[in-house]
Length: 503
Image 1 (cartoon, rainbow, N blue to C red):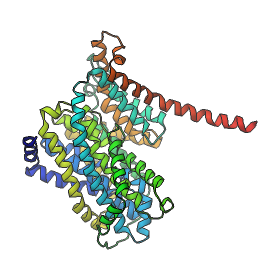
Image 2: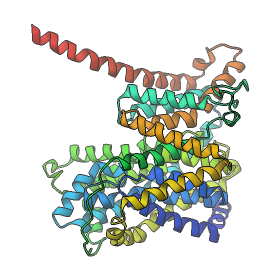
Image 3: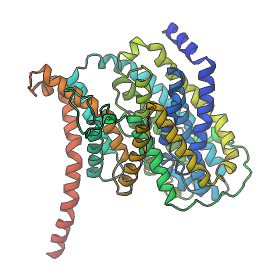
Image 4: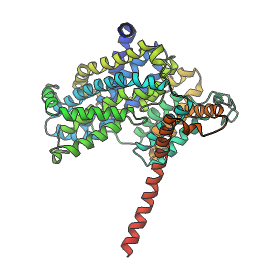
């Protein structure tokens, strides 16, 4: 273990990794602080850059940018009441109320301090949970992998903010996209329409960039410009944070635990963790009446939760190739591109790379404090940048990056097409995150299913006979039926109420 740790330090001690982490940290802080530009979009835009980096440097950019962007979304939320990322939306009103009371420094300081603490707690969970789970996963066969992948897809629909039925529809759209091409067990061209560019299928990365970046630019074109930020000189940012840590230590711990649990669930992510933790903080608070008036307690718990979920979301990603959230889905694409194929064998064959990822998460969260404070102080200037100057740069990055991935124009067309698809889906309440998970995991579900049928000579009984497979099957089927039951209940309830009223 000591030798592995020394090797990991050697991997991250190169100038390439150090510069990549610093540059990605600054980039993540800037993108996350711009209203409407999510951490997922910031990560997706980095993918073309990782194409030219070494494996460790490439992962370092993803780790640093995602961690910083989740935190910096708190800045416009506190100052403008416009959350920079979906994870910041849960407590933007609370933070803005504190700013109106003259406590902007306390609100922003709580954001940076408890995000860093939560991030480190998430790393510790990754270090503790992943190795024993990897040993268990080594005994998994294709039967267990099929149910596990299916469960991951179903979990995505359970935590979707939209209608569960619409989330399932979004997931099926993603699975349909994953069917395109000849990379299937039968090697038969499907949905290619005679176009040779479609024989290789739709790459997940251009699809991700399209639905998260291009779709966001399209939404920005149709919404009014946010109000300008009044210039304001900040005092000490970290003043009072240690006092808050001692006062709300249980809330901080609870937020860390909730963030870790939600992060491990496939398809959940930081925004779900933040909403759940803020709601729990209000529910169990001794002063619930103060929530909404500028009370810091909710910020402490939700801020600790959203960053804890970032690192713990890598647990299912590294073990099974099942993304914990959309950022982890992008990271899986980068891992495959760099030859670090997710799976339990990654922990034995390339243990030093895994430890390097642990160390990068810890370093990124430590760097968050000084860089976050600096970002808060220059926020007034960053947020003054007009949208008309930002959006064309983002579109240019999308076009250049998508072309660089495959060195052809088909990647650019793919990004543009999925930008339109993502915009239309979100405008009508369909879950883009569920579609992305369908694209990323569709191949895994199909291959595991077909391989299992070949092994069992066409019998479906082995899918339920193995003890672990049976447990996973029960969970997956329950998760599949749950949204349908919710939908039926919603349809029947008004009818029952109307019948009772008529009596």
